[in-house]
Length: 351
Image (cartoon, rainbow, N blue to C red; front, side):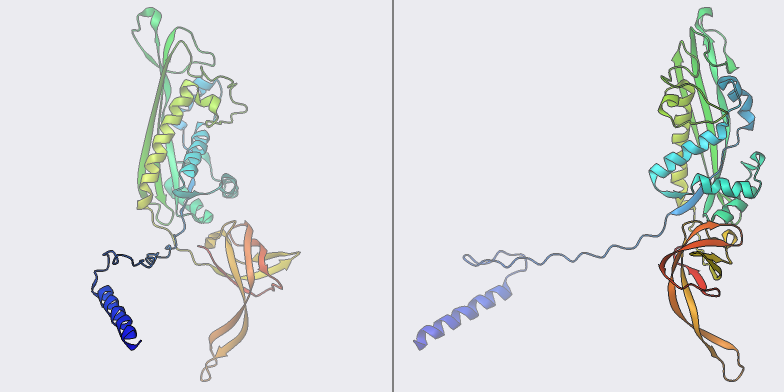
């Protein structure tokens, strides 16, 4: 019996020594089942910084206004239509966080921003600060027209300009649209990057507004260049191609833009029917949707020799979200917490 036990012990030591000597990735001895390999360690996902915020201003189209009116038969805000189409492509791409149109229009109205300032980087940068963005995009429409060649006279001669809705048959119509844009730093009004786009479309026997299926024109000067029916027209196709190319250039310029760090602190000025009004607003960099923490000073620590306050001890009260903002104040609603009081301190959570 003792001999058998000694034999088992010796075999156990042998197999243990063999396992230690075996290379890490070598197969186990015959008849021995390998233990499952440990799963490789997965590094925790690194937190991503916020997207860079931009605002897109309506494009200036003063130099092509007469050509635009000749094509559409009325004064259409081509610059606004191109701006809206560009915003659509930038949102779809997702590289930037683009300010909502309503928020931009509200600030523009309050600041009496005129159409003549559309392409002015300095004027637009001031609006950008109120919006709390990292940069603004201003642009211009530099070419917007067509070249019409009459096939009945051998295709010779060409004239630039436009013709009214309906056009003239038996022509070869070519639409050309050229746009450019600048990415502007809101603190310095420095142009950080430039981009441009050119679109061309050519068809036979139709006007620049032909081929649009159910497209019935614009009402009251409004421009929806993103509608599928309009984009099937010759001019609509040219606009779409130009704006797509422009958006690609703007996205490529995102590395030239630095994310601004905005640290905002203020006080609760009033509490009324569940709304919390703050004494800070857009001039400090706040915007609708921002969240802030609310704290209450519970004790002031004073220097025993001078009596000066050297530290304030605080306790958290809750979190609030901005629902409306002007230059010097904000209106908020509670996200968490309660019993907010005048004099409570607030500071930003997201920047």
